[in-house]
Length: 271
Ligand code: UTP
Image 1 (spheres, rainbow, N blue to C red):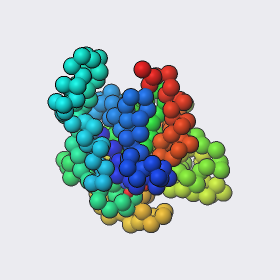
Image 2: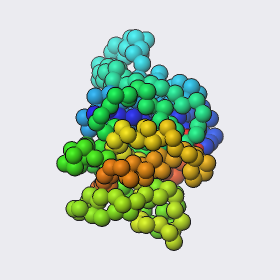
Image 3: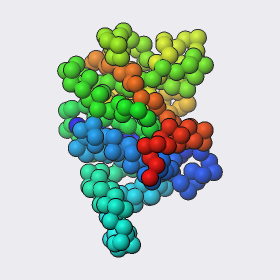
Image 4: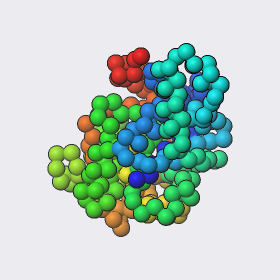
């Protein structure tokens, strides 16, 4: 399995901090969010992670670079030095590409297609500004996909009705307590037409056919190329499942969401 992390967005909801600190680099304990997300992908069985970022965010790549100067500075701190070595090992499994025009999440995912050409297995997509506390959903989603013949799976969380217009919302039939077979997806519906309160929540395992669909995707909600719109077209050709995961999704892309994330991770991320 390969993974893809879109991390090229402007992060305008976190201005002015995000002028110089990409939201994906915000620390949760001693690790930036992007590192926790890469670690989730690797723990779920990804051999390689493609990160789509922007030329304006060089710190993401630098974070994973081999850096002899830092090893020298940590010569008397073996535990910290071991953290740096671990980070560099992770870095060897990352490939980088750019999104130079921010045309939306679907467009960012499409920029990773060249590095994933020839893939036949579903690709794990993890949003670079979404962390999940409690059980990480990616490994369970890979297992659900295998149980359903390699089908696509989207991670879901139930949201209050007044918040459905912020998310991609799904319709479907439950096949067990947490898994449903999708029948429809709608990006940011108004509450009165939302097919459910189940929102797509930061994690996807997608049949690579989605890349061809993204290449011909017309702009949708907000004039952006929406990933949800291409998954909806994928659904016309292939089965897509939803997994209402038990963990809680946290959006670090706005100040309130970030503070909530720090509270949720305060015991596991403290050193
Ligand atoms: P968001 O939907 O939060 O958008 O992105 P954004 O543009 O980054 O943030 P705001 O709305 O201006 O505050 C969800 C994920 O998709 C990536 C982001 O980096 C984030 O990890 N993304 C979004 C891209 O890579 N490119 C885009 O054009 C949009």
